[in-house]
Image (cartoon, rainbow, N blue to C red; front, side):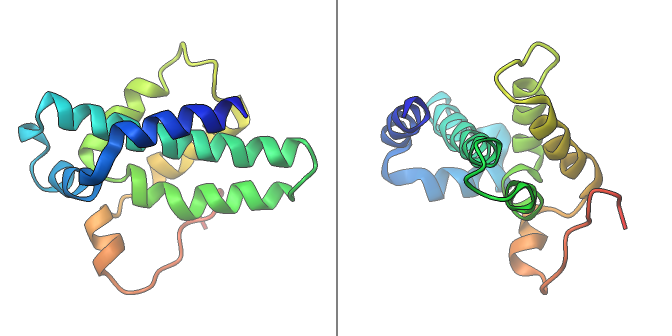
Length: 136
């Protein structure tokens, strides 16, 4: 419930220009305005919060363990593969972050560290399989 309230608030911050701001963060991140930076913060934080929610569902036994792992492995590239989002992630997931369960943090970080495709290639390229946790 608490997570849902935060995501709803952040969704209001994002507003109607989210797609344009997200595209600008890919094409010219150095030209984002302060307002656009705040929109990106909301988009990225909400994504990570949704991953955290999926992880919690598994911890409660409501979904399978593999479900949250598959979601991370399948979605992190889309949200965290460009330079702007990677910089945001490095700040967000810094050593003092205690609101991300260590196991979830490790799986996200593994994908970030080992998946070198850009979000543009991910969107425009042919179908591909993401690396598994062992890098196979």
